[in-house]
Length: 302
Image (cartoon, rainbow, N blue to C red; front, side):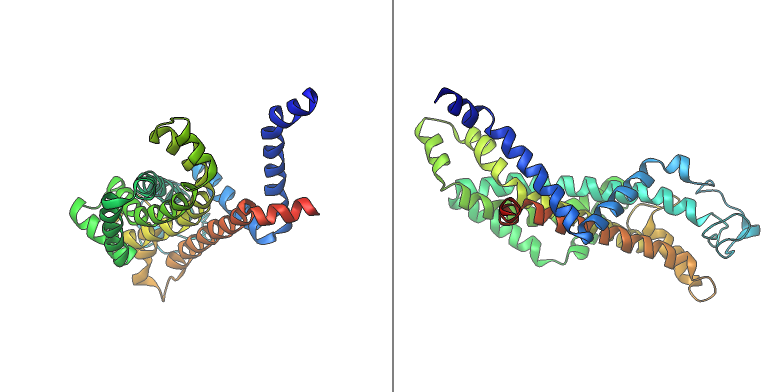
């Protein structure tokens, strides 16, 4: 009996963790789409981290004598833009800006949205009504339009772009967290915590929040791709990260005037944006399957 209790109580968490990790690995082995997404995400992150070593030229170096040369000419693998700057180097360095804005903006949305969702879902009453009505108003605005309005107030800057994009994701995270909290707060272990005198803050941090994380993690992964797309749109309109800092959005904007004679200036960064967004979406879909308890149960049955 003692050995059985030790096995049940001492090793159960480790066993559950092992089963979860195996379940995640199984999903990514089984789904080619999820595996492709993971490869794309890792590749983009490595490119951003190693940008100083991978970029063959100075991304800000101007040489009008070689402006708009086609890909593969004179040592420029992807050609040059209208100012003679190496396109490959600008795209590599632009990955740093795009990924940084995407990750930090989603982080802002997670922190603010989680706090609002926890408060609204756990405490209910007038506080919930006020929070959710404000969130409903924010959701009524198109994401890009809301980001443009915030940038118009704060001004175009990298930090302001992160804040603007993060604010646009806050109401969505808040709604997801609130929906999870409404279900979790009625479960037996939460009632038991109240019965033994545990205060609300400890209940929220030790019981409610950990059980609401899975859906939030999946949405966060999917949101990074959307945040990168919003940042590229803002930079394309001239309201994101200001020049001369290379971003994928302003590289596309630089080439729109030369789309017919030099289409590679806009098309190449556009393809990179598409692959990055697809990578995060594919990875998020695979992560959603891995965190779905029904799929983990199917794996265990097999």
